Image (tube, rainbow, N blue to C red):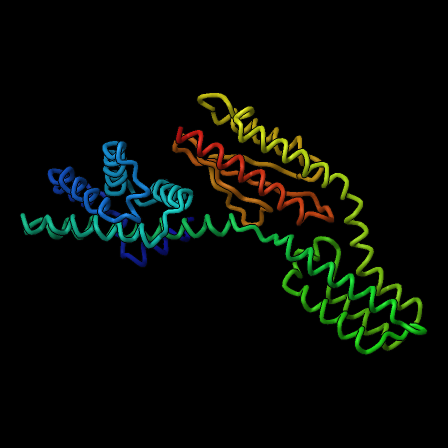
Length: 364
């Protein structure tokens, strides 16, 4: 975060000691704030695509929040504390799926309305330009955090596609083995098998987690073709089939967890677990830990729920949960299990159900 702040200061030529000048700018523009906010929401509501994100009954509350945000932006030192305040709004925008282009349009409208005040009083112009500069800084931070949230929520696991590709590779190997004569596979069978291995290249990283190393597989294939013996064939066969057999060892646990997950999801959706009117952070923490632990405890190494975003970037699953205008960060790491990619996808679905339920409960 410190590096990001340093870059922003350099990009926008932010003065370390301009807090007093920003406060002065805030004071100069304060007589016009209500008028600016009224015009802002009037213009935004004219755009149907933006109006869909605004609760018309809560506009007064939204105005107060936006004014409080601008006050912080213009009166606090530009440090980690202010960065986090701005970043949190970007996270909320991602949560409600407000496209960055729509957010940029909102900033454009607000900047124009602020700059227009110089027509009433030309002496305001230097102060208004300073305000707009910091609005552009906050827009940059929000856009950056929007895409950061998008990145952490796009799980790397593509279990359905990988499942099909693995099945094709295994079937190709069966054809390869059945067509051999004296440990000599046909040229056609070799080509089909190698083609199926090439299709797995895009899953190289997750395949290594389940014990399948594509480079080793190709090397053993070359060794077997050059030296067609039972020993060289078994090395090739075990490199593919042994990890697949290992995956089946945890199949019962995975299937049982999947059934339990469906039951847990129905309980969540019907508010039988998250049914209390006003949940505390501790209660949310306990509920989430219980739901994940009871259904996938055998596969999970660590669960963390925090009000602070993690500095790490290698969590297996990273989510943000929103409740009562507060963002909570949920991180899940798995044990080195052979079918980790499938379990991660199931846990991801369960986390999404918890997230959606908390968000809807907040909106009730």
